[in-house]
Image (cartoon, rainbow, N blue to C red; front, side, top):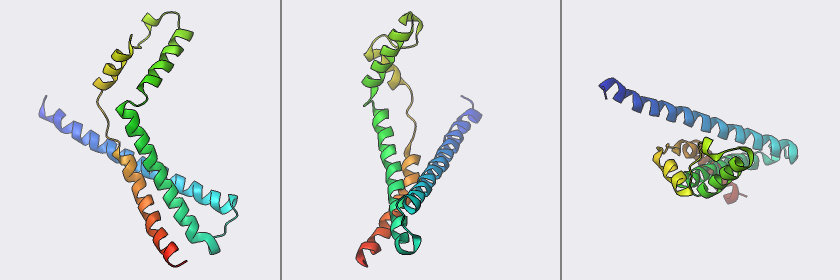
Length: 149
């Protein structure tokens, strides 16, 4: 492999990682805003009396949701749902296709797992890094809330 191509791969991974980090931070910010709106308008809380509590809820919940989504992605990448996804694909193809030989589905579940394991794993820690600041900020705000209540 020429030197130019070797340098391109890490830069592309870094670029995609930074893009993923920006997107996950944006999604967490969107969740933060949605939770603020729900608590402000849906629960009829006002910012004067309950503003601190609303900020704690919004930041903690949005950060926790992103971290839980990251854990779900990790569990999925490790193969926890492989059997379910293979079964659903098999039922779909046997129901709606004339011949299973013309489909790109592996013949057996073992072949499906080998095929899936042969693909490289992607680094998804940017999801956790996008939600961690919100969770940390919510927990930091939570300490004085209970200390001075």
